[in-house]
Image 1 (cartoon, rainbow, N blue to C red):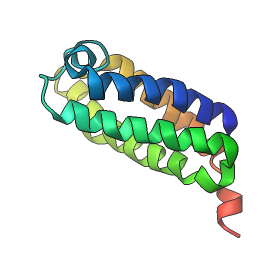
Image 2 (cartoon, rainbow, N blue to C red):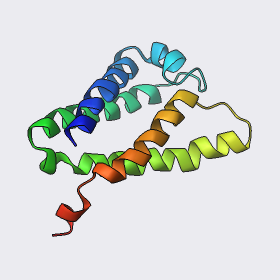
Image 3 (cartoon, rainbow, N blue to C red):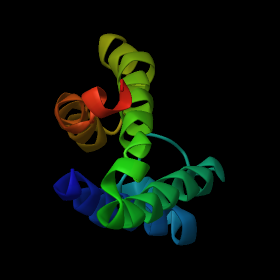
Amino acid sequence: MKIVFAANIIVAGWIGISALFYPKYATATIFQSAYQYTDVVRLVGCLWLSIAILSLLGLWKPMVFSPVLLLQLIYKGSWLAFVALPAILHHQPYPKAMACFFVVWVLVLPLVIPWQAWMK
């Protein structure tokens, strides 16, 4: 779990800071210019920076902060199902690198989420 939290700190932290403080850069790089710049990019930056901060706390108390992993599983899976997949099917632009990263994360997260501990 700590490896996933560390990856979140690096990746979500970088994306969060980029999207929040350099949104036009994030639109061009992270979102691969698939979408036009709006202030929604900064909102997404806030979400990802929050995940990075919670993941930093997760290095200290993994079980207490493990629900952030479930949140990621839900929102990344939802984005893949309701945004990326329709874009693929309709030949519309979407951030391909982000979609690939989300697929990997959606496959990994169920393996590290402490389901058994939550069920007690």
